[in-house]
Length: 410
Image (cartoon, rainbow, N blue to C red; front, side, top):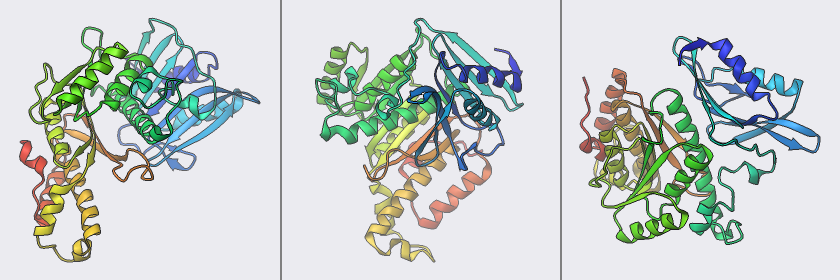
């Protein structure tokens, strides 16, 4: 894959985006080295999705842009409106473009020298573009998907059960985060490109009933068409038996391992580590395993931050921050923030680029923070370690994760 002039590569992307028959879906994500976040409709955005939809007034290019908190949708009529919208997007400093057409997958990554590395792959079978514009058809897994039915999220008629709407929203938001994260990591070379012989290895630590394990496998293999092998780890034999049965029903080749997060034995190190709502220091165990494996991508949604909270109750609050810990509810919330800030710092010191993002809207769950870490292999700037040292010294705490990993502090 030779480097191309960026303008030439973007012209190729332009033609793909403006093809109302061939475009299935396109995703722009990340930012070019040293550039600000792309700016769409007066908002900083981290990701944009495009596809063509059929409205009453004709075919339109639909652009969905995602900032830190929500999605915004705009539709542009095919022709001059769509051309202007695409021109504006291509002028923004996105670092990666992933374009699915009916016949091929195209990936573009912008290098530090502002050149473009382009990878194109033919499809084994042609895709059919979905042109419906209603919200249901924008979902990553349809309501009647066999995985959702098997997991009890949808009923036998393929409709989401009223009592499982929150779980379905969680699955969808997780898949959006997983999709954009893998797209970015593959484009930048932080994840190896999977093959049929060497599929992408995904492990879900503390998988429970494996809702997200199965959703990830289904989406990555059937929608993204990536070779993938999933493994779920849980301490309960009952969970492993249940999940193995579900996998057999769905015809999915997956592994389920019984054991603690810290001691689970896997035949090969995973490429992607998931740890969603692992309680208290179980999240630290999962992050430590991911660091030890050298996983390329880590998605962790922490839960129940008791460890640092207990340390704060025993420590003397430094001046002038007494008001942060005087009231129990404020101390607990501060402990949540402090815990995840320290985890993010340790991950950075371990060679990861880290984002802290909203998992699902807080209206659905108060535990809605997600740590997204991509292994870049670069030593963190010296001030990251200095800030970390100052923070733990000021508050008199010792993060569990710091006890579990050995960091090269230079």
